[in-house]
Image (cartoon, rainbow, N blue to C red; front, side, top):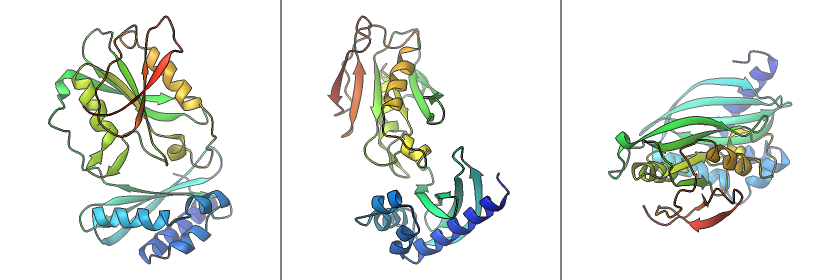
Length: 259
C-alpha cells in the first residue's frame, strides 16, 4: 500500500467524495473531476449510479478505512468499503496528482448464485491476463472438461467500464451466467474486464483488447481449431464467434440471444 503524501492526499479526496455521495451532492462530485470525468458525469450518471447501489444495498451504516495504491501512471487508486443495510459495497476512486478526480466506481458485494442450468463438474475456469502493459486486463476463460476441440465465444462488454461478468446488481452477472451455461454444454468462452474499468486513467481507444482476445483464444490446443460455431446464449450483447482455422482472421458477429 502506498504511504507517501500522494496516498494520503488521495485518501482525503476519496473520503470527501464519499461524503458528497452520501449527501447526494452529485454536482460537487462531478465538479471535482477532470474534464473527461465531468463529461462522463453529464446526464445524471453519478446520481443514477448512487441510486442503483443504494436500492440494491440499502442505507449506508458505516464507512470503513480507505486503502490507496499508486498506478503506473502516477495516479492513486483508492478503495473504501461501505457497510449498508442489505449488503456491503466498495467505492473505488482514481485521483490524479493535485487531487483531481479521474474515476469513480461503486462495486456491490458479490451475491451471485449459479443458475440451475450450470453444471460446475463439466468445466473449469482459468484466470488470465489479456493484453500487454500498460493496458493489460484480467480475463477469465471458461473451458469445458475434456480434450476438445471446443467451439468458443468471446463476450464483449457493453458501454461503460464494465467488469468481465457484466455485473448489473450483486446477484445479476449476465456474462457469468452465459459463460458458465455455455461451458456446461461444451462451449468455451473468454470474457474480460474492460480497459476503462481497470485503467481509467490510461484509457486509449484502440483495438488492443479485442486483438489480444483473438490471440489468447487461439492459443489453447483444445480451443477453436475448426470447431463448430453455432451457439445459443442469453443477453442483449455482442459476441464474436471464431470460425475455421484456415482463415484465422475470419469471424462473424452473432447476436447473443438465449442459453
